Amino acid sequence: MHKLTIEDISFKGKTVFVRVDFNVPLDEDGTIVADTRIRAALPTINHLIDEGARIILASHLGRPKGIVNFQYSLKPVHKRLERLLGKQGEIVFAPDCVGPQVRELAEQLGPGQIMLLENLRFHKAETANDPAFAKALVEGCDVFVNDAFGTAHRAHASTAGVASYVPVSVAGFCMKKEIEYFERVMVSPTRPVATIMGGAKVSDKIGAIKNLLERMDKVIIGGGMMFTFLKAMGYEIGRSIVEENMVETARGIMEQARAKRVKFYLPVDCVVADKISPDAQIRIVPVQEIPPLWAGLDIGPATMRLFAEALQDTRTILWNGPMGLFEMEPFSRGTFSLAHTLADSYALTIIGGGDTDVAVHRAGEASNMSYASTGGGAFLQLMEGIPLPGIEALTEKP
Image: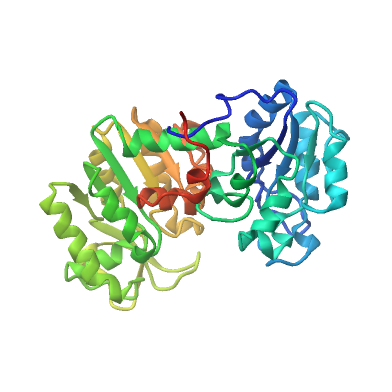
């Protein structure tokens, strides 16, 4: 990694602005459903506490669209963070993220003390990357630590803009880990290396697939996007999801894979249903025999075996996107089967994307993966080979 990290500098006596990703899911009562992203920031926060830094944490939550909407307040996060750090009643919660009151609270922090700012996106200036807002966020700060990989693909005030107004900007432990694991796949993988791409649309991942063809030994396609590829092969796909404007692109990708001698795998059978519903009639059919009025909603058992065999000799696996509509039990088996295959593998297994992470948790295999990325859009953008503004803004190593 060519950027400075949290391990490269001393924080003793310094005021540190830390961009974290506390954009956690909440239920209707405002209770946190999953605190994985909060836990991911704990190593960075604890390191700064041990170093005696004065710590200012900043995050967004949801999409309040630049207005104050307490449905998206970070107060539930404040409560959970205090519990996870064992600091009940000790973490300051600021009523805003800029302004005289926030500056006063920051000046009162002692070594190892923490303040959590209110939702950054209560201000339109955050997503607009307004220079004045960015400068106000880090007023009086000595260091910027970016530990929010999930927002690193956004050139916002708190992810990129603030770097211009502090002496040094470094990656936190979560950010550092994300980049290191990604480089283990894309830069110097242990071969054979394979990628598994799922999800609904080819258009969402076309850039990533093209970039991966330059680096992978094997590419496996599943999920809704498989039907665009199958149509490109001349198969009838019934009422399965398809992107008509991407059929030629899909055909070109398969030709490119052949030219580069990349092994390219598509499903050989699928689970079809007469409607998208848990109580639908379902059949398992070869991909050449999808009924005209039925839709494919998962990969079939022969495909599960094919994919498992294809992955048997791989040493590095990157997975992004489910194999089917796993949220409904009749169409979850392909995704869960793949999760079990990766869990049993001796390969380095890296999971990216929110849906994939949820699916792996539901399959009970999350702890058996080598690494699960905390960023969906950022992870996909890295797969496309596009630099992330939140990383580019960090200080270069000498």
